[in-house]
Length: 183
Image 1 (cartoon, rainbow, N blue to C red):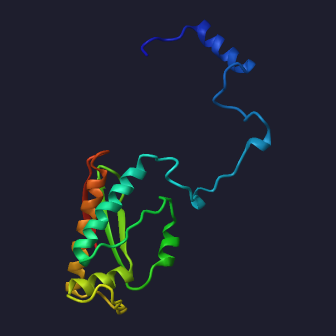
Image 2 (cartoon, rainbow, N blue to C red):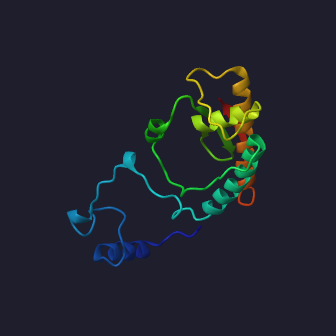
Image 3 (tube, helix red, strand yellow):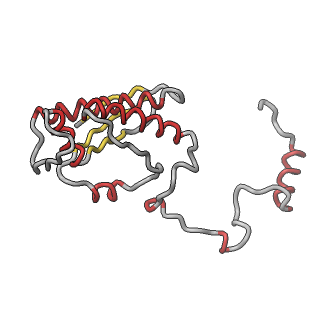
């Protein structure tokens, strides 16, 4: 890259841009006003699978290992299926949450940002019922209140196991250090 263009070369390049032989960096867009589209970046919802094809094997590995981890917690093999991966707004996720819900933030270094693990109320009820010796097929509603210290500890153990499964699912692609940050 250490070469500098001569004045003749610069003049030839500028002439080619003016003649339409090379696309220019500035100026009005060719094609008139119909070529301009408005894009609202706050309302984007698109499928991740088409843009990130390597993510599907990671999700499949994660679903298999999550099934095994939940089996150790619940005492029986649950049915775990992976849905297509998609971008969602936080507000649309919060609308669907029941009460109570377990939210755990985690980091996946060296990736930026944080992930959120959401454990819905039915899974919390089944997990606590089984963990304390109850029948896993019997559904017990979880009362709407703060979690006790014992319940928090059980949910933290579940969260750390799920984050470990996530790390193992990513291992063939990228080594990640997954750590829980907050409950």
